[in-house]
Image (cartoon, rainbow, N blue to C red; front, side):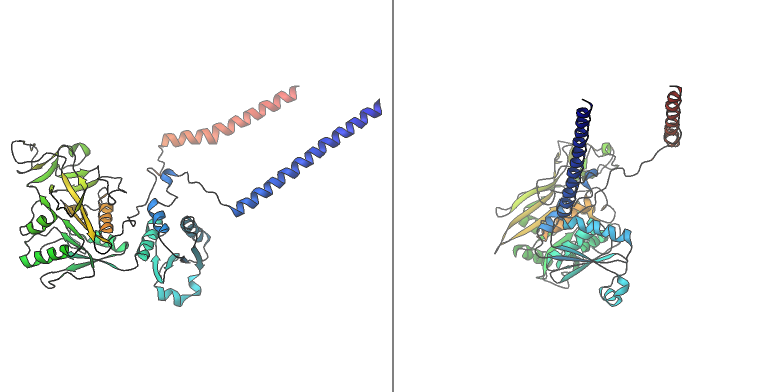
Length: 454
């Protein structure tokens, strides 16, 4: 009996040992298979706020439209943190474009090449695409995508700004000028040029779009006719109008079917939104159009004029910007007591303050025109308000026939900093530095004390 019991005990131990060994074998085999799959397939998930570590939809669309390989050369010294930051940035683009490659070069080993490219910063990127190159000095999606935008255009985009009549200048530094906006246009590959029709009676054929930026003086009939001929020949146009518009522009307004209503648009709800002047019109509801599809924040139009649309039959019109329902066209002097008067020619809101026109242009293109009731929103003073900058860039991208190349704005967490009071810091320190360790020590002593008493 004792021998049979011993045999049964040995066989039980052997079976347990075999099960244990088999479990270990299968466990390590599973780990090996998972390790092999992890080397072959990559799985990533972005849990950050607003998925700010993932490429925006605009960047993904841009990469999908780029045919051919893209080569990114990082001229960075062998600094682990810098090179890792570059890998993370470029890796986000490589997930959506498999033929985008990254190569690291120590700039100290190729000084001639660095001087040839004009590189000045450690970690600067140089992007090659279809024989063209662009430099990227700031690591980030905005700078890199803008460089890819410029490379993907294929040819230079020249936008002429009318001058000679008190217009806003795209390179001006005054508050009413568009210098900041002109610099933003250069970042996305749009070159600004000044056009004086008194010196050059015809608009150059290379002009991709003409901008009439709020002239202060009347144009001679010959110059107005030059603009009309440009529009009749299929030219793209951005017309920034103002309440106090000089005379002489009626022929162009009639040709486009966009007339300006008397007075200035004011909004009774502006003070409730924290806006000091009711003449500053917040645009929160945009029309369904490629220009405004990516806009999320409201734009702010200071001292705008309302537009009345009666486009000719060959134009397709779309509403871009519209005031709130409590706005109206104030004809008299603006004051705190100004109210809508239905017995006058004042118009009640919602009012049209921005319109897009388009029509087919032979052989297979499209003529595009945008008319807004304000030009102040793009000036150096107001460009940073709300979505003004993005709206302006979207306007020029659409006018230059780059629908997909809408500006990419950086995404950030709403509150990346955690600010704690002294009392909160003291509480956290007391709990984790004193309370928790003390609790562990006391519980350990009690456990040992009761064990010794047994």
